[in-house]
Image: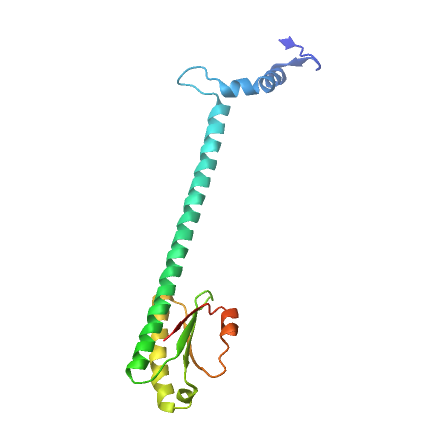
Amino acid sequence: MTAEIKGTEKQTGINLFNSYLSKHQEFSKQTKVSDLYYHVNVVADAYGQGLKDGQNIGKQDFIDKIMKSTAEKFAEKANQVYILTKNTLSYIISKGYDVNSFYINIFHNNPKVIIAVDNKYLLDDDFVEFAYSKIFEAKNTFTSIFDNTLDISLAGTENLDIELLDQDGFEYSEVV
């Protein structure tokens, strides 16, 4: 069998059939022969779209879960930094030492805390040993919970530049 399609040379067999399919491709994709049969292109397109949608939904769910998990972990870390700082301060104060204030940088990869005390305490070996033993305990607690370090330091209140601390990310502070 031979047929001629306008604008092309004579075609036979498979070439003619492929030419016919290409001219009617859009029609064949959108219609079905019966309720039980869909053209292979319809099935392939549906499969491809379902896979794409599934990947996008799965990807978005994954991203949402990661973001929620990250936000929850950040809040948990921040709260733990605050609690450990307050516990350390309470312990220092309970032994009769004065604490002026504290500053927290929670946005650093390893959270940081500066506890401001009177400069005279920093020259007192008993205070330094006592305070750093409690600080060491708090740091170990944090590391065991988060597998991350917490830096806690003592600083003298004399010449402590609060603006510089703020610029370095110590955005949260409390006067004790």
